[in-house]
Image (cartoon, helix red, strand yellow):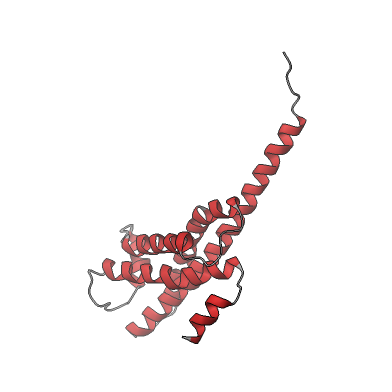
Amino acid sequence: MIGAVLWRRVAVPHWLDMCVGMVTLGNLGMVLGWWADNGCAPLHDAGCCHCVDAVRDGALKPWMWIGMLAAANVAMRWLGRCPAPNRYHTIAMYTGGNVGMVIGMVAGGWCAAQVPTASVTAAVAASFAGMTVGMLAGMLAGTGGTERVLRALRAARIAVRAVTPVRTS
């Protein structure tokens, strides 16, 4: 309760605001989708190791991904404490940020699957932690990189416009 009150009163940078939205609502969507991919039944055997196996075998179970992306975009759109700094950042969040989340989640899940364990609980915890860390890193890197590209394209367009002679009839 104290944390919630402090969170509402203390100024935080936008990147932290994005991370909190991702860890809360984005993870909720991921977990609900994970559950749906498992037939709305308890996880068994290898936990989320089947996610990595499904990707290797080409059998995509989409609900974990759909849930994560849908909930994360809801969090980015409506639950942020402060508005996005500018238009480039907003575009970057929904494009590069989403691509980065997916790539980060795959990488985090793959890394977690490399840890051998016989415990379903440990496998699920490692998968969840790996995917969450990957999701956050991917979101921040994807958003930042895309924003830089958008700014560079804008600067190049202005530079081309500045050196192009104006036609007079």
